[in-house]
Length: 506
Image (cartoon, rainbow, N blue to C red):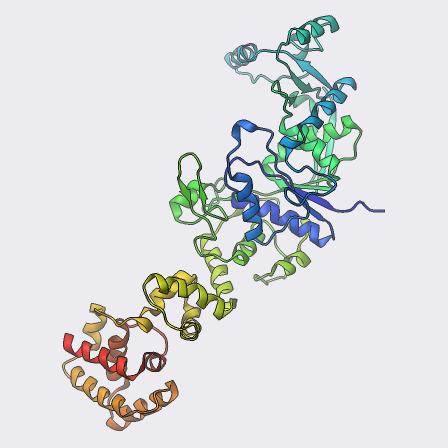
C-alpha cells in the first residue's frame, strides 16, 4: 500500500512571513490536497536567540487570510504533536546519542577560539577550513581522544557539540522531484553540528527527526535548502529510515530578474513582500502587507501559483480558483529556474478578481470609506455606484477617486478641461439645459437621456457643445461613467445647482 501523502510547512518564528514562504506553504497545500493527503504546520523555533514575539501568530493569520488551512499544527493537535520544536526538545538528545552509538556522530570539544585560529590559518594559505574527514583526527573530539579523556571532559562539564561524521569518499546519488538526479562526492561535505552546547538540536537534526516522526512523505521547500539535501539524505541512511521524496522550489527573483526578492525591493518599488502588515515588536517599524494594501487573498494565491509553476504546454488559462489549482497542480510543472516577480501582473490579477467580487460586499467596504468622510448614503445607493465604477477600479481604495462626484458637488474644475469645454456661448447653452431639466418630471436615467438627446437634436446643437460642459459641471473633470446615470442619481435639484455653480465660475 502506498504511503499517505503528508507534507509540512515549517517556518521559523524570526519575523514576518515573506511571500516566498507563503508560496512554499501554497505548493505544499496544493500537492497534499491533490493527493488526498495532509498539510502540517510545524514551528521550527529551536534557535531561541532569533525568536521574535508575535511571529508565530503572524504565520497562522497569514495562512488563514490566504485560505491555506493546515490539517495539523499548533492549535490543531493530532497524533504527531506537539508541533513546536521547542516543545519537543526532550526527543532530540536521544536521537543524537543514537547516532553517536552507531558511529555516525561524535562529540567535539573544540573551543570557538581554536576553530577561529584554524580558519585564519587556512585563509592565510588561500584555503577554506572545513571540519571533516581530512582534519577531524587532529581536532579536539571523541574520534581523536581516548574514551577516558572524553569522559574526563564530560565529567568536568566542558562544553561540547555533537557533529555528524560525514563519509569520506562516497558518491551520493539523490533524486529531486523538480531537478532530477543529483550526485555529490561526500568528501567535500563538512561534519555539521547536530546538537549544540546549549542542549538544543540544530535545524538539521530536529528537522530530520520531526519529519520522520510526523511521517512526512514529501519535503517541498525552497531552493536555499538544496545544499542541505546531502546531509539530510545521509542522516536518514544513518538512522536506517526511509527518506521522504525531496522537491526544491525555485527562487522568487527581483522584478529585474537579478537576485532574490527582498523587502528592500518592495520598499524601493512600492509593493508589499509580506501577506499581512507587520509591526516590528522592537522598533515599531511597519512593513506593508497585501491585505492592508487592498489586495484580495485570491489575487495573492493566483499570483504566487504562477511564480515557478505553470499548467503545462498549451494552457493559456491564467485565472485559477484554489480548487482549480489543486486539480491542475503537479511538481512536474514546477520550474527549475527562478521566477521574476512582476508587481504589474499582480495588479492585473487584482483587477480581475475585483470584477468578480460581489457588489454588496464591495459596497460594504466602500461605505466605511464614505463614513470617514461623514457621508452616509443608503446601501442601495452605494451598490449602484459600485456597479457603475467597478470596471475601472483595481482596489476598493480607488472607488472615491472614481465616484466622489456622486456624493459631493465639485468645488473646482479641471483647468485644461474647462478651457476646452467652456466657450463664449456655453453659459447660454447651459441655461437652456437647466430649463430643459426643469421641465422633465420623470428623472430616470432612460427618460432624461431621451429628453435631452431629443432637445439637442431639435436645436441642431453639436452633442459635444452640450455634453462636455455638462459633464464638467456635474463631475469637475472629463471623467466618470454614463452622464445620464450621474444626472439621474444625484437628481434634478442637485444637477441644476451644479450647472448654475459652473456658470457662475465662467
